Image (tube, rainbow, N blue to C red; front, side, top):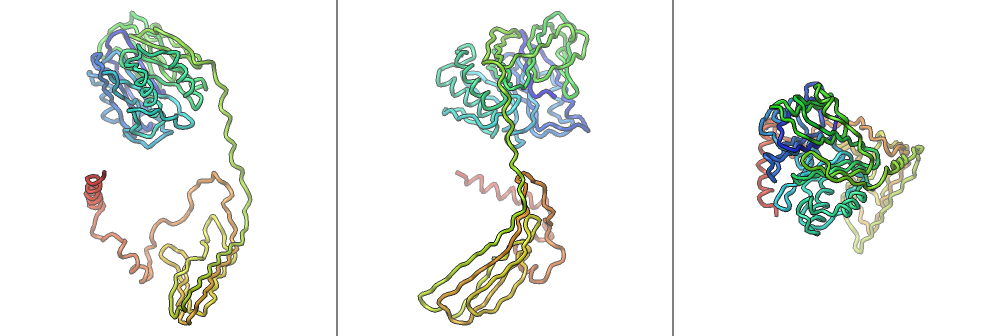
Amino acid sequence: MPNLLAMSFEGELAPSFSLHCLAPGRTLPDGWGLGYYPKGEPSAAILKEPAPPQDSIRSQLAAAWEQVASNMFVLHIRHATWGALSDANTQPFARTWGRRDWLMAHAGSLDRKPVEIPGPFEPVGSTDTEAMFCGLLNRFLERGWRNLGQVDFDVLLGWLAELNEVGSLSMCFTDGRDLVVHADRRGVPLWLGTLAPPYEKIAFGDDDLDVDLTRRGAKSRKGAIVCSERLAPRAADAERALVWQQLEPGRVLVIREGAVVDERSTGGALEPPKPRLRPARTTAQTFDVVHRTTYKYAQAVERSSHLLRLTPVHDPLQTVHRHELTVSVPHQARDYEDVFDNRVRRIAIDTPFSEMVIESRSVVEVLDIDPLAYGPLHVSSMIPLVWMPWQRQVLDPFLLPPELPESELGDLAEYAMSFVKRNDS
């Protein structure tokens, strides 16, 4: 499945994009997005969908809607590594600068967020790609570069090299006229397909995506197609007219109207990052735990009651071998379990005292020996159906009325949130 596909043509085409990855029974991606410039205008249109359902209506628009026509297309299929599955985190991203819309998409992931570049462009979502995009535009604005034709590419190469140092950087961005492409130096491949007329039918793709450039009418246009994977020909003309080559690591291309007009390099391949060492497993440890608190009063306390939660829990992560809780003042005590299965001691003191010592001594064996063992604990998450009478009495203020259905509860929560949004500064 290609993460990134960008296409530039010397004239307007109306290709069809068939997202087979959304078919029933397939593993769905975390999102997809298609950006293009209708009728060559500087304003971009974007179809995007986070966490798409099977056979989504929007994907059918990308396949059949005749209005999806342009000389520049950017398609991204997301496999999330940064941020939630939301519209704000779904590529391609768009920003307006220099009286035109800019688009950016990125195949790969940075190891950490890039250094924030101050300026008016700020990310809406939480992805590394959008933060990188806003940083580049803030740098363009600072230097007064209003389109890619004004960019000093020697300076831009330095910025791209810096970003590639902190993660994989196969990416593209465009102002609607020029398309800049960078091939990652860490090994994430990027392919360039050169399309040369004449041809009658051009279609290419793989098991997850098919692109048909001539489905809505044959127009022999020169073009350049950049993809994170080499796509196989689906028609006879595609095998002859579309020639693929893998870009060298660090290669930067500037594409305009379907032709490569400039070619640079940010350097050769980088050494692959060293794998992070896995924290070592340890052995189970046994600890003597002492909790001692002393209370002193200027005047004697004649009567008091206390609730003590000092008994360690016995669960799959630790074993309590011994526990003792002592109070230095004569008292009456009652031990019980609360509704959350915690051991609790309630004491009542009728003897006057001016000093009281509460001491808890425990011998606990800690069984959590693997820092990366995130398996779910087999602990009941449901309130027991059989309660003691006092447990029902304690929980009554927190339980939903049985006559309130889930749909009404959702409406009530939405209504309550409207007050929060209205008063949120």
